[in-house]
Amino acid sequence: MKPDISEAVPDPGDHHPDGATRASESTLTAEASSRTLLSDALRRLRRNKLAIVALVWIAIMVAVAVTADLWVPQTLGDPIKIDTTKVVGLSLNPPSLAHPFGRDDLGRDILSRVIYGARVSLAVGVIATAISVMLGLIMGALAAYYGGLADSFVMRLTDVFLAFPYILFAIALMAVLGRGFLNIFIAIGLLGWPTIARVFRSSILQVKENEYVDAARALGAGDLRIMTRHILPNAVAPIIVYATMSIGGAILTEAALSFLGMGILPPTPAWGLMLAEGRGFIYNAPHLMIFPGLAILTTVLGFVLLGDGLRDALDVKMKD
Image (cartoon, rainbow, N blue to C red; front, side, top):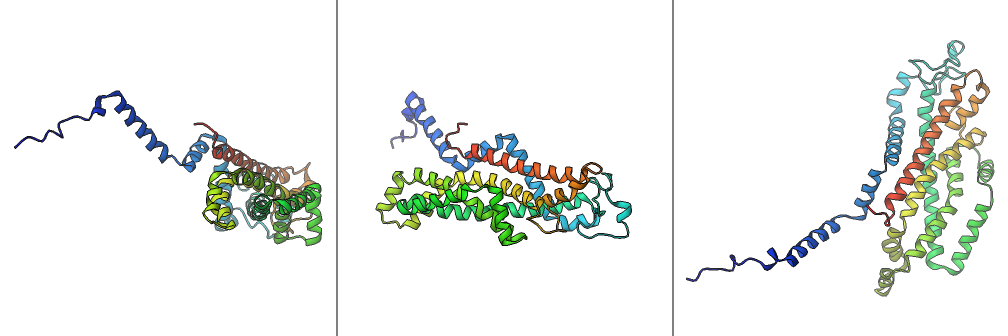
């Protein structure tokens, strides 16, 4: 029997330079295929220290606000209830170990009210921005995909909204709708959609000219399928960035409306309302305004920095 020498014969590519090149190219191809757009974005986001710090701070704020009922009233005191027997002795107390942020003019713990005020601000920021994003995506998609009369109508409608000063428009809407949680969601949500619609329209106009969209249309795909399966996933990255930053803007708008007496009704803890209540004591008890102001500053700054980090992470032109 002749020996089988097929296994003993070396592959020419094992020692030939071309074989080594082909092996290295195949390895690089495998590595490149394993690196998705999401993994690349997460890698770039992790390298942005400011964005990570902002994300951690936002996570802490959310965790503290969600779990407040479990520990705040027992350790710091009720943020709403007033103990009339102790108001005289506890009102306007400065920060101490027992009450790190001090007490207000009615003897309520300011840290407790700041924590519960985070619930109001975060809820307004997320829900109002969600309303703006939903309206903006629909209107921007209609304008960009169909063009013509639909595009002209949507763009002129956004011009009308953007022509009014933002805060004055918000005050006018709140004057018509009345104060309260639901009305703040509606007012801020209605005011935020025009910019999102313009950003989304611009993204769609770039994406819809690609060949894969024409191929899907040639294969008989309907408008809804083309929009949801081919255009939306490739055009939504700028919206994610803008929506993240818009949450901070919505929080700031709610605080401004509450400060002006057009937002949350007292005695509900709200950062803007706390600023308004503390402005009469700015000289003899400045802590009434300092700590709610810092809460607004750090939270809004956190969302802005996170949005800035997401912008860099989702930019496909960024090189590692």
